[in-house]
Image 1 (tube, helix red, strand yellow):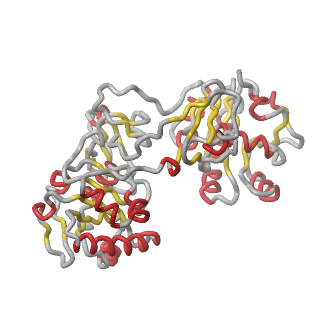
Image 2 (cartoon, one colour):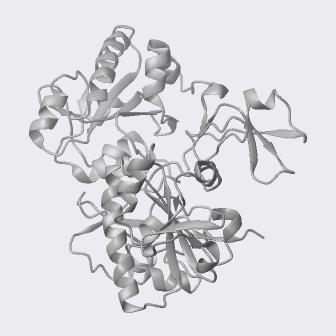
Image 3 (cartoon, helix red, strand yellow):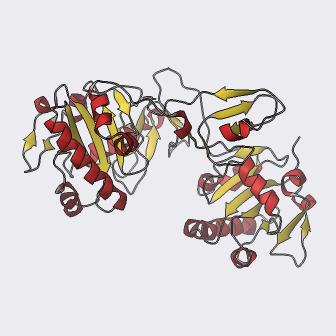
Length: 424
């Protein structure tokens, strides 16, 4: 059994007391481990909001069995002290760097701010504390051993699991099955099928997102939309028939798009000369027509008109586009060839397009795979990149190839790399 003193040691700092406190003062309390740093602007903003929520909760109930412990990611003690002086909760002493490092590793902290909620016995209650605390009665639920978010098993194999999305009405996370959302970018509002069936109380119209469990042909995706060409001419679906299609998600304001666009233009023109059955459609992420026109003015291929915001949003969610630029490549049937088109265009050039036009995927190099939530317990590489070896005897133990070659006391098994281009 993991106890709080095993996690945090025996001594903590407190801004409300003149001396350090003993870990026993947190006994029987629900604890939030707050991973943050002064140099992080998002952290500073989050700390302000979190402090207000924390103080308001204790003003209402001075005996609330809850507390927070700050785990600093600052690079020097002066920054730590300056940042911590405005926090109303406890902190791990800055000099205990080894423990802070182990906590980051143990809880797989990849981004800050991050708030991990622990039960009084040290067991993790939720990894979503930084999201949940902004919702109603979060502290009350946590101290009762409950979370705001809840989950369920899919009823059917056809039910898609929207991993990073929750229902804004019933708080199901991940949202499973049909997903209805607002096309207004500023809202970020989503609800499940059950809540949608009770009636839409949101201020804007909701759309049903395409399920990534299903395959839609290029014609189905764009059947109700008029694509445009260089001179604003309308593009017919017949001109894309039997072609491999690259969906290029880009924006004028993103600097890295410029370099990829130049590479794509060169390869696109070569593909035309080679008479390859290949075309590209721009899916703009710009927020105004002027920026769209500036971006598309450099490109020789097709585009989804700027005003078609709904289809832009549908495609972004259907292909789980998190970062831009992105280059998604489809067979003429709509079957996915790759979500990693940017990498293959940069590394393989025209050979990538030739491979796709044969309806084939480009073999992935095992040493390039990124295990986004896994660290190497040998060299502490986070995330672990390349082949991953797991020990089934040690608790939560993984090694990279280099550390595996150095040996381990137990037999290791290689973990198969998931297909990042799989439809689901």
